[in-house]
Image (cartoon, protein in one colour):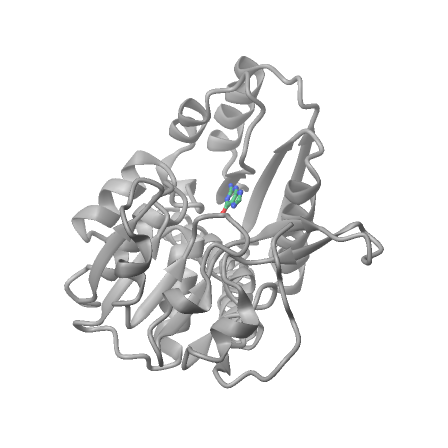
Length: 302
Ligand code: GUN
């Protein structure tokens, strides 16, 4: 059992992701209203296979956000046994449907389906997750394109707080395709200009790297991985981890926590994101922005 403490003195400034996300969602809502005046209702198709509890909860949050932002959601729930062929046929249909501007297939997919094949089947113009190889290529090359929502949310959060990024020693903990890799690319873009180190399970003496970080971003998916002794005094700590830790004291039987041991870490950091309420809301806000951009581009293309 991972020791997670949520009480005690906290000296760091707690970053309120909900507040920044609300601001970004209001901007998206204003753009959605302009589109609706032109007869375009931005629409995201959300495809979920199976009933993984975490995925169900993410998908519901996305659908609520669409409604609140004045956009349409096409909620497509399929059994976990759906064949890859049927899923690819559905994506082909959604690609052709001019009333659908964005397509999101909730990950992870069941084991019998090749995620890469499914992601690649989505029309890049509707790839609001930013996972398609075309979007990834654009990101790496610094060209315009859909940015993946969580890495983009982290960047916007840091920028909104006016955290100096140029030249900042930044450690990204985790090298996933969804977060670590794109985030490292985004932060090292010339216009952001951070100095980025990616650490992962093969990193020797992890703490020696993290203790050098002005900005430490934990995206490893392991509760309690980052302890206070791994953090430089005054560092900015961004926790992307969302872990379900069993807790019999909670009605639902678990509690959500990040990768960072929050309370001791908050005594050392200057800024820190909580879990929940930090990066998570930003992910959804950036998704809303991508759907708007997809609808605007498809509207302009007629
Ligand atoms: N599963 C966890 N995060 C995400 C996400 O950002 N997009 C999709 N499609 N699936 C996810």
